[in-house]
Length: 423
Ligand code: AMP
Ligand code: GLY
Image 1 (tube, rainbow, N blue to C red):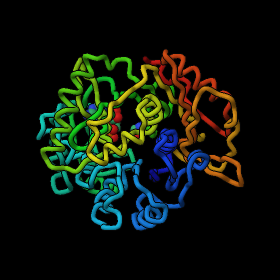
Image 2 (tube, rainbow, N blue to C red):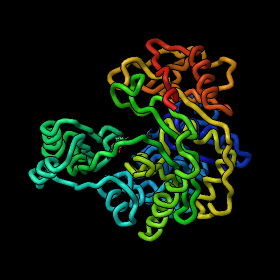
Image 3 (cartoon, protein in one colour):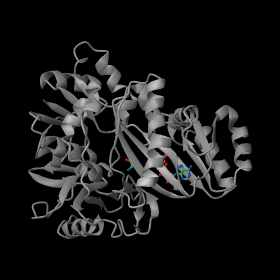
């Protein structure tokens, strides 16, 4: 099979790395990719939402299967674009239709879906510019902290958690009346704050059968001890030690099964990943969000633990034959630590030469934001490298990643030293 992976981060390098191992993989392309994917695949200079450009590439390179990394192309309807075009309709694509992708594209839609299928989540109401006054009055009935969510995609920045009522009202006004997050905040979901610990569960479904993939926990804040600004993710571990078999049973029966059943009942075309963000409150799981793709950096710990041939799993998903493929997962734990550019998640410089990539190591160094500059690998993003290691003991896996990081460097490189230490 010839494969095209869409995206350019650590998640996509991980997909590419795992697919390249498959005996069924013939030619492998990534668009646009990074310096890491360039070593194992052919990078194509194409944006992930350039559907016409992607079509040309798929036909030129006789692509059989497309794996969509990020949410934007899915929410914009890349699945439907393929299925509605006679030249592309037979190409396999891993990812939901636009209707399915709305589970991530609209927070309100996700909440309505959960309500319709009795999936446990925080109580909520949603508001627009026209109902701003009612929104402020609703805030007065809640106890802090206040959770405000822009309805649409806001590059991971659309959720605000505020302690102060007056500040919450001001932010609500700024989102609804002054487009704080552009069109994404034309509607705002206000919800009950859930107090507990977070974990993520990943499900692969063909809309009928499903597989629960390994769990993961990511570390979102820039600073040690989970302090400071939110980032895309500074590290991750899999499995999550507190996701015991009993707790996973609750997640599967109360959340995963009703989610897949809901997708089927509503007739949504969905052949891809469901990334379920959860909070454990007491002993019970609640959904905080759906994503219609894999997480980053969660992918960097989830995929390396899957022993089943990834390409076989992905092809079976898009053929609606997922029930025919057994999922085998290693008992070993995986840990990934992200090296980022100094200044991230605020302003940072790019183009710094990265040293140490050729070292002998048991870890895998996934590239997140890298580019080639005259044969030199240089930084090209905020999150630069994700260093993943496996071991029977998760503490050893973490140690191995830190050992590898100690031999990697670029000007103003930063990483958190406490990934996994809370477990
Ligand atoms: P989201 O973009 O939906 O993942 O939200 C970003 C972060 O906000 C989540 O990872 C949680 O840490 C937090 N969050 C979202 N909703 C809630 C909630 N209802 N209660 C507590 N924390 C929340
Ligand atoms: N690491 C969180 C995400 O990918 O959304």
